[in-house]
Amino acid sequence: TTLEDNERIFTELILSIKRRHSEVKQLIRDQERAAVRRAEGRLKQLEQEIADLRKRDAELKQFLEIHPIHFLQRFPTAVPELTGLAVSSHLSFDAVVNTAFQLRDKLH
Image (cartoon, one colour):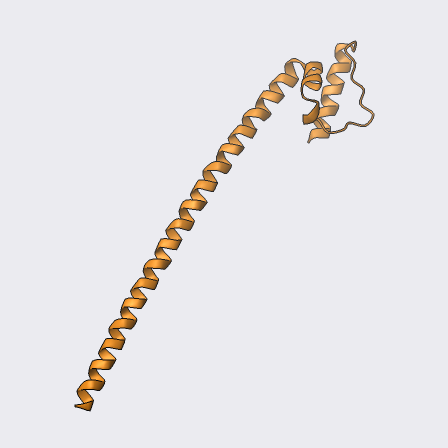
């Protein structure tokens, strides 16, 4: 009968919609998990880069404290252009200390 056909068609439509709804929810969950994995991977990469930079910073600070002249000679690209700051290998210790302080101030 028409009523039974109508009931069957609507039941099939409802089941079809429920299946699609379930598929869409699963797709969204899968995409969320993939996005979280990518974000976690990027976070680990950034944490490693930060750790590497901190290590390099500590090494450079230690080297600067021990050998300020050698630091300037060894890492010229790590030091921005320092206008009016002369570095000579014949400087007195006081001049070396002053130069190191000037360099520190310009880097920060």
